[in-house]
Amino acid sequence: QVQVVESGGGLVQPGGSLRLSCSASVSRSDILAMGWYRQAPGKERELVARILNTGGIYYADSIQGRFTISRDNAKNTMYLQMTTLKLEDTAVYYCNAVILRTGVSREYWGQGTQVTVSS
Image (cartoon, rainbow, N blue to C red; front, side):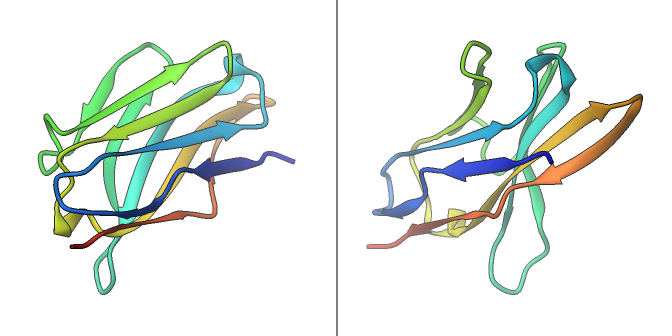
């Protein structure tokens, strides 16, 4: 069974930084894309950043220039480096992985990690 596990959330002051990590329990070659979504209270879940197996990267306008998505292929781990955090970045952050198994691609989600930006 595929497992997607996030870590690295926490409480940080405005202007601070955090790094989120996500790993999937599959071979690197099975992963088509990985990304970070977030959901703030009372709002819909939104895509924050995504990295494709081709190396292509997407960022939401709201975090452009402040967040950086990356991956360590040797560790099969994806990261989201968040800097200059704002109050509105407060949300539960979810890792998403699109994984190809037996010719079928499926999405898998982590359990979520809370990021709270507060003074």
